[in-house]
Image 1 (cartoon, rainbow, N blue to C red):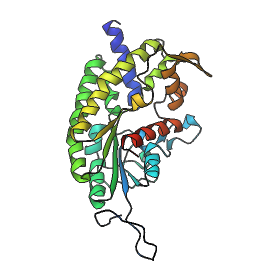
Image 2: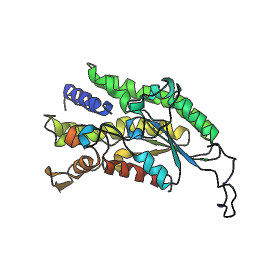
Image 3: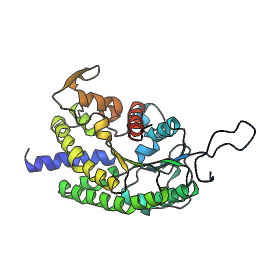
Image 4: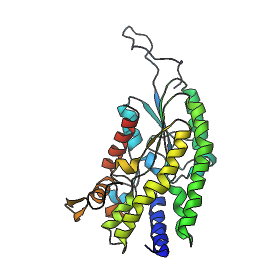
Length: 300
């Protein structure tokens, strides 16, 4: 593919992606059956963007805003209380530098950050629940790429953006690790929603763009995220792979809506709203898939 065409397709991809109780320490022990105090609860602390808040578009048949998402599912199935500080639209810099989160951008039932950054609020919660932290999840980075869509050279811009994400994660994750102690931290990436361009009439070169997106997610973005999480002993969940993003486009299936298409495209159409509404967010089935991947990574 000529360089100019690849830059234009990458720029289009970046547009869509961006649109993207205290208790004593130690084991709680058995539940008392003789009227004693119940064991202290364990918590799941969540940070990130709209993927963590469970945001769903109005076109999905519900009011626009947050609904139960993968973090809720993971907490419920792990018997943990979710404390979700995620904020829709957050970038990796805002995670640690921007105080507050508009109520409309918070997860359902999320606490008021009270003028604190996500990182500060999470650290406070982790220290408050020391010895009771069952899990920390982080999903961030998609919104960092948004400005590159307006650049004449989107690939160069994207290279800088990924470097910024790595720098911000390098500053954020050690702080989380210190506050979380030995509790498991899991970092996530995103589905390759742009595979949906294969069936979208909004993208004249949709098939080329879908093909390009595979290498961009696998080799350009996800490797950078994985390296930073592994630096602090965190697990990395490759949501792109878990949602079928690396499957060969030559492997086809019969889709009831779009006919005979690549199986990976059909899967992204089922797990996100992209094929129907050009919206990057997961469907309820998508959140189920992401939750399953997180639970598998943590041995739950």
